[in-house]
Length: 263
Image (cartoon, rainbow, N blue to C red; front, top):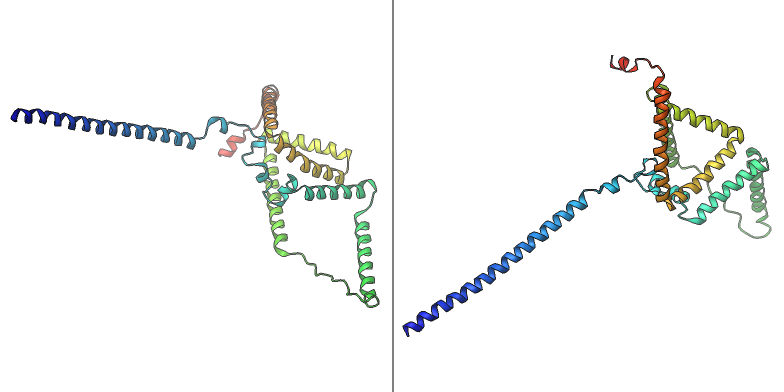
């Protein structure tokens, strides 16, 4: 009996050791799996948090960092320019076209048009108000028209800010600090003067309005292709400007502007 008892004890101990080894092995494997998952999650979070160089190096036209809709303000004017509501956009473009035909092709004057419209409206309302007693109908309801103060002040404030920005840019160009801006400004004004000889201000304004109604939509639809072409054009312009700078601009004598600024 004693011998059997001694044989049973090592069997029980071996069973206990096997069970403990299985438990420890399962625990080690689960801990290693959890460590691997943590490493994967940390690597994925680090990769998601750090922006990829491909996305950050994508060239955008005019250095744009926001969507086209946000660039135009993101409100109703942006919806009109980007044709979010085709009926309103078509109506605005049709009204501008009708005004251009009236004033430019038919040579109708603005003051004459306004006076004729007012004569027609006042005559209709006056006759309708007096004839309502004879035809037993209610007189026309004429609402009170008034210009709200808040939108007008907001428009004036925004216009003042833009005019001040234009003055700052012109002052910066005239101060002689940046030759590149000066050349761009001279070239732009020269092209604008040539266009002004071809057409009057109304036609120029209508052309600019039509371009605002068509080019943003075209760019939003073919954004990738336009950005790629603009990147190549920008690189070529920089190359030609570097050649022009080395051959012409660098040989122009300049005064000691930097020394005067330091003093």
